[in-house]
Every structure is written in C-alpha cells, then in structure tokens.
Length: 392
Image: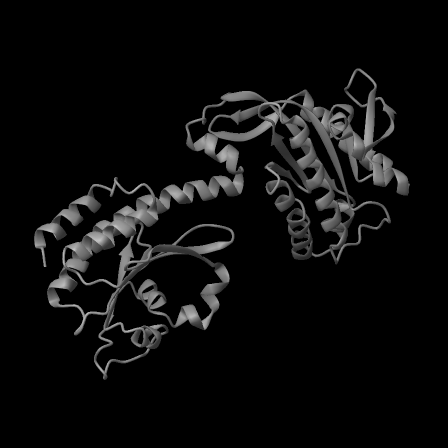
C-alpha cells in the first residue's frame, strides 16, 4: 500500500476537498484515490442526518466501477426495524465504530444488511462514526471483497481519513442545511437571494409578477369549534392543496398569514401570458384539491377558500426592523390583490382576478362587474373563472 498517497488524501480532505464541487464528488474522488493507494474498497457509504421537514438524512453510496448514488431517508425510517437494527443506527447511537469480518464463518450476523453483504461476496465490513464539531454522530461504512478482508494497514488508512472526512462532510452539510432552512421558511428563490448576500434592510428590487393571495373561508369559526390539534392538521392539509400546485408551476410562496397565503409567479422577459396561465392552472388545481378535503365544515355551503390573482410590479426584498427582517414583497399591486381577495369573500366566489391579469387569460375569464375597492381611487373591472360564472 502506498502510504505517501494516503497522506496526500488526508491533506486533500484537510484542505476541504476543494477540487470536488459537490458532496457526491467528494466521496467519488476519495474512494478512487484510496483504491489507487492500495485500499481494496468495493463499496463505501456515508450517511448524514439533516434538518428538513420531510427528510431525516441523506445517504451517499459509492460502488467500485459504478460511481455514486444518492438517496434520501424520510423521518419515518427512524422507527422501522430496518433502520433500528442496522450498523449505521448502532454507530450513530453509540458513537463507536464496529467491524465484522464476514469471511470468517464464525462472524456474528447480528445486524441488518450483514447477511446480504456476505451473499454479495463482501469479506470485511467496517463502520466508523463521523463526529461533527457539535457532537452529532453520523456514519460511514467501508467494505471489501478482497480475500481475507482488510489488512491492518488498510484499516489504519481508513481510520486516518475518517476525521478529515467528517470535517468536509460537516462543512458541506451545513451549507446544504442553510439552503434547506431558507427554502423551508422563505422559499427557494428568496433563499438563494439571501445566501448570495442580499441581507441588508432595504436591499430590494422591483420585479414584475403575477400575485396570488388566498384565504380560507370560515377559519375563525372552525378554530373556535375544533380542538387545536385538529385545527392545525386541517390548516396543514389546506396548505398542502396549494403549495405543490404553486411550486410545480414556477411560483414562490412568500408568506403564511394565519390561514392566508401570499405567493408570486415572477415574470422574466416577455412570458407574461405564460406565467399568468401557469398561475391560473395552479388556482384550478388548488380549488379542486381543496374541494376534496375531508373533515371540513366551515358552517356554510359556499366556497372553502377565496383567491385573488393580479398582475403588477412588486418590491421584492428585505423589510423589517433592527436584526429581524422579513424577505417578502410589498407595493400597490399587493394591496390591490388584498382588496380583490376580500371582494371574493363578499361575493361568495372562489377565484377573482384583476383586469390586468384577466387580459392574459381571456378565454378562461368572465366579467363579474365594476367595483369600488377600499383604498383604490379608480373603479376596477373584476373577472372570475368562466366556469364559475356559468354555474352561478
């Protein structure tokens, strides 16, 4: 085995593995370098826990001559026997490494995956903790098909790269964690702007966008009548009917206001009609999904939610005071959308749109009437979905 190459690998990791642009490339380069140095790796995996509302952790698996695959584990996996009885769970729980010499007939097959690995020809299995600076324990596993398994020199080489690999994994994980949290709490596009340095109060720009402002009907009445947990569950399911429809069509959810939701569909170039079409498609999808929700009794036979669609320029950026900022959008166009949403409630309609928005989707819209909206100086022509007009 080439000890000089192993030393260079350790130095490369200690320097942050900067030649590997993505986490999977770190594992790919690491394993290929170790094989070139004489460590007979067949499969190596790294499992890193994360903070994400749906994902418990990510697993990177390198297989010799097959590259690296990435998979994500849901939170529910933690409660399954498949995970609880696995070597990775044992390492993460105890913070101690383990080894199973699978080529030895007397080797205990006491954890999940070991019997399967033996059948695949694995002769030696090593699991090592990746301990982050905050004490959190993650794991890496190393296997070989070499006759007799790993030698003492091979094990020493693996152990020498574990600590610097943990540092690299932590840096990459923290970078991804920051992105995950920003995506979760402020949205992907806003999160990218924040990570790129747009963090000063007043740091904003004017953008053209289709504006979505929706509100649940009868929420106050239901919240007074239902147990708090039931109310939260209903509210979450209600938002689940809107958020995927918005995100899948290029929209960005900016804010939840109790049972209200503010989103924008940014417009770039001359694709105004296409953006408005996507927003309208999202509105129809949300309407259909909300209509199918069970456990909903808002005390009326009217629509379950109201939605305003408008088209205009918004000021998109940081607003707040001191060190507490909110990345959102404001402006007369947002105020207009709020007035239209209140009109939808008054008229018992599901979807209403301004004339500016309706012009981009004329075949789908029908005039509702001209209205004087609070705080708006000019009378506004308001439109609704053509199918709702025909039903009414």
